[in-house]
Image (cartoon, rainbow, N blue to C red; front, side):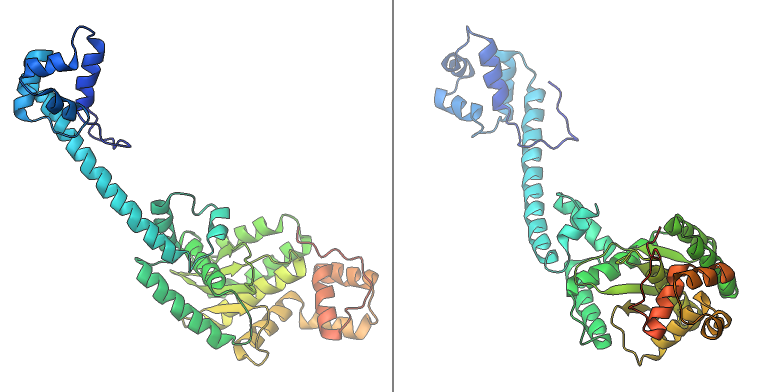
Length: 364
């Protein structure tokens, strides 16, 4: 019999089981007869077989003589039993500790969300490690502390907006975590204008748009993270520095090309206008923004002008009103602007929401 020292069994195996096996394979040898040969009481031998007594060195020598199994084997078997028993005890203590840790963690994370995305499963030890990495903490206490700071910072920004605190904490943490796992080219602020032109062309074509946007942003040194939406988490975008590169996190809550294009360009604006000289700053852009916030107004203006130039907008005002689908398509072809983006701006600026249209807004 080979003893596996590197595998922890479900339960420790006492050497008494081997005595029982030997008795079972030797029909001419009864337990009471073996006890007599060993010079011990039958009850004493029975306790060894049942694992209630250890196989001592003296018993090992006697077993060697009666069963012709070396004494050192019996001692190794007994030693392995003691080691396995100690390790199983330690494992159970660790398991209980992990249960307590997970009980606390569950109060601060959306468990089903992370499980659905494949970040966690049914292994508590692995799950605890995964959550620590996602939230960039080393302990449960640090997780709780980070959560409290995040909640305070968020509500300072938007006291009126109703959200699920742990969901927005999770969204934000997951964006930072995934950005940290990305590698992109070197970023250069001088290339922003050129980047915006290429983004507009991708928006105009609107074919395999997400993948094309990811590729072009990677080439220009900007990390793009698409964070799956969470309930009561009204975040449109998030711009921040990740190591030496700017990063943009988005949630595709609407799957509309006009919404996607504006939100992405809004975050590019934050990078160009507001993150240039401050790598510690970040912008979490909510569905309901403070209309007097200087930074958000500047980002809105940037996005509007990059998506639809002032020249194009003036042309619309002077030569195309009142608008209809045919005119919007004509303008789109003239300036290479996706019709849905034009329609979105027109509805917002001119309150044309009642305009009947067949323009496809779907993000393709």
